[in-house]
Image (tube, rainbow, N blue to C red):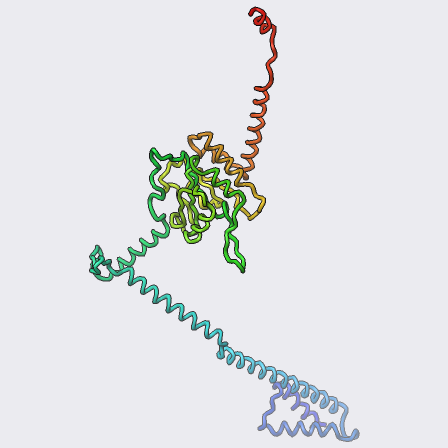
Length: 378
């Protein structure tokens, strides 16, 4: 009985020590063996209390060993997973390696380009014979010359290409139209569209031919002032204006770039702004001279659109009325969400008044008694 209790105590100690067994402690192992032998003794030789204690501690020890093995296997598995992840991290895919190579190549390429551009801008100018011409920065390479040339190039991009975008007005015997009409083609006359088969194309708005003919000389000096590049706009303008109603063409290089948008500055036109009308579909492009702007909705590609017919009628009415300052008329119509709808409403009112006046003039006058007496005296 005492050996069984001692064996149970050994098992309990092993449980408290997390199931670790030291090979050097042979006495505890022997006690464990004796406890196991005590269990299998005949019933007459073993006590019930000792048997229960041995069975309890043995089952607890077996459960702890099983749990410890599971935890150990999990820890080994997790360690192997970590090691495999580290190995996978070291072995990068090919596309990542190529991506890094491409990034470093681009960085080196742009760095070399920046250094070369800095050198080109810093080289002194030469005459037609190839001789170096000295300036305020000397006759050799200069960083200050590079900075000055860079600022000059930046100014050329941001500001219009010239101070006077249009030549001087025509003098007699030539006829100079009294008003100048500045047009944007994209969104007003055409709409850019892109498809896989054709690429970029410009769709012609209904009524373009009638509009250009109606607002041409001698009523208006028509000027196309677009934010498109000349490479894109020249063939479009040539296909739209085959009759030559457009007198001047201005492209993106004539706009003012503010860092985000290309703004049209009418002060460079060399014309009296009281006689200038600018038609556009982008409010940001006309921020500098809002009083001269007539902003319309961008054409959405509708084939049944009639806005150009209404616009031509509006401009013809304005030109025939010989307004001294067009800005007052434009300011009045621009206070409405749809200026063309307001113009059509005013036209209907005007037509009704003209019809009433015509009826009053055609109505025969009733003869009074005095008229009859006068005719009798004759």
